[in-house]
Length: 166
Image 1 (cartoon, rainbow, N blue to C red):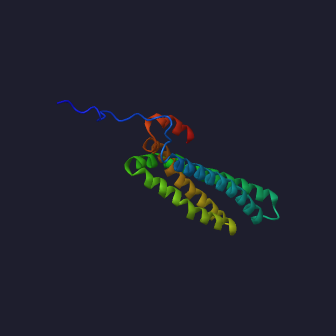
Image 2 (image 1 turned 120 degrees about the vertical axis):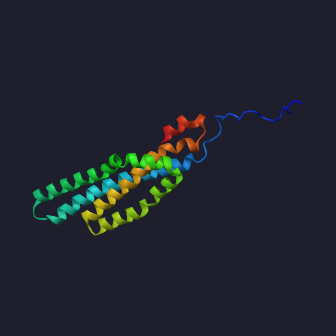
Image 3 (image 1 turned 120 degrees about the horizontal axis):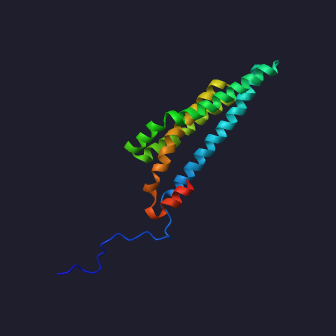
């Protein structure tokens, strides 16, 4: 006896009118995370310059050198985690559930930003640089996972469009 014709033998193909599920939240997290990172880095560099000027109020040359040094440290400490932690972050993204890494990376941004705000408030270069480094570490773990999770959020037909959004 033949099988009824009503039972599909293949999964239905994705239709172009269907919206990708879960992608809007992911794109929002990426945009907010990148915005926070860049805004925090810029504000930290300006605040570090102000701290250098406050530390040397009567010597503009020394204040300028200190401000330049703080700016160099800020850029180095923000960039280093992306370079040094990329292999570990990618490996963790392959071994652990990606949504755990994404949630953890975005949730630790809040206390780190509070630490940075406290550093701004008391004009502490150490706290500002530390919070900037911690924020970069969190983002270094988020970066490879944000790209690796896309195939889990959208159907193959929407993959190139989803990658373009990120």
